[in-house]
Figure 1 (cartoon, rainbow, N blue to C red):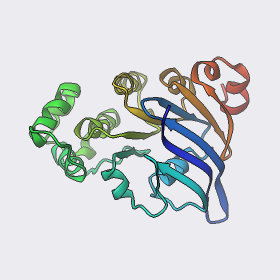
Figure 2 (tube, one colour):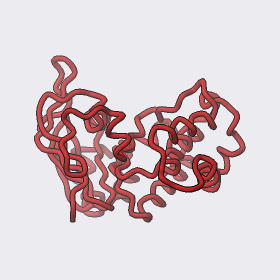
Figure 3 (tube, helix red, strand yellow):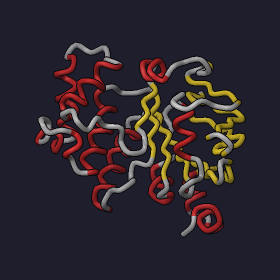
Length: 239
């Protein structure tokens, strides 16, 4: 398999705090990889470093065969790396429609139907967003905001989707819907790196998994094997 994302000996700090310590892993084309760990394990720091929203101390990140060392976050976005951050990253004062338009304009897909066609595809998958399209994003519920964030995937199908804590703050019903949509993206052979505190849900979705503990990789392997290992759940993730 071909690695779309390759990370080698990555170190990231917040001042004196070493948040990511020597992390190495790969995400192959067409697979879903879960990076799981308890709160404070360094998961969101890692994701921000991958898209160069946070500087690294050392280590190498290669995306689509190229080093990302001197590439800006917007350059990586135009190259097909889509980061949905913790907290969704929607623009609260703008309408649903305006959020989608900005997402489209940042990395337009080469299609004949343009933004209008992108909207049709979004509203087919997210009918609630069609009902709310003229509302501000900030007036949406947490689940609806997460739908809006995921709608960016439909507007601009990425080569690599980085999703950070998609279940954060959601009701069980809404969390199920969000993971169902990620499952649809997976079945379409999208390459996904999912960071998630809910280890069971993330590992059920993924092909492979890594367990992050205090900034380092504590375990890795087949997702189903990790999910069924009681020592992993108890010692690294908590029950």
